[in-house]
Image 1: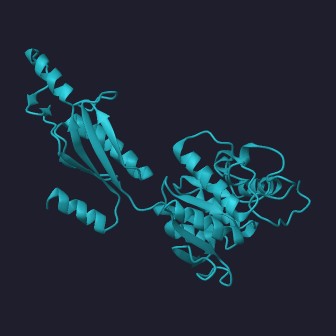
Image 2: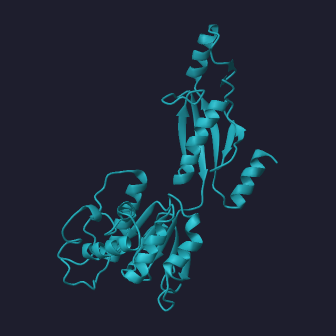
Image 3: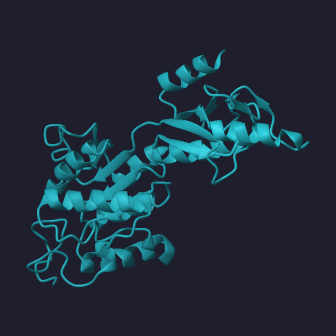
Length: 304
């Protein structure tokens, strides 16, 4: 089976796979290699190639397992494979530059790393009004969206037409089914605001590799939730993984504004950018009083 046939099989099976292609070998690098040819350690130069690296050379990289093809140099293959696997985790496609043997901070070889990864998955627990707004925002960002709630009267495709799937089940049971599939690009958002739903959901979500876990509720709600989570056996470090109150501190009030704040927090965490989360601030969550940035009407009207 050829490299292209194997790549096509992975794509048809919707398996994550990356294709790295040498798009340019610097003419300066070839000239320098020719000039240095008097040295016994000089790079091999053949036409427009340096160290056997030629434009058009291809390497297929999977998250695990052996590589298919070669870019012309074993060291370059190893470094590009490392970067391609990182690209698969984020779903990013980009052009990277290397030395002929994969050296960093060199621009001898340009490699186009094309990432073929399934869309990131956002799992939203709780069939509430904010779920629809968050689902729409997530779809705009390219997520596959699942809405899950144990109450069949609320968890319907009619209420959440933007969702790729609407599941009637308890959060922990659903995560037991899909948890092994979740990875660093995926997000779990717990909007249930009810201990009998959100505590089991968070406990189960912390057992996955999901890159983001956020939970809605006021500061007082989350303080009580944190106690319940510790009572359930979680450590302080595990509880600290939960972004709660959920979202960035942008003064969100409406479901749509709150959806933006949640998605912005997810992006900031994924890219490593500094942004102020509600979890890391004090005082009222939204302008004009207490309550919570993730619910228009709180069951804790006195919580300021």
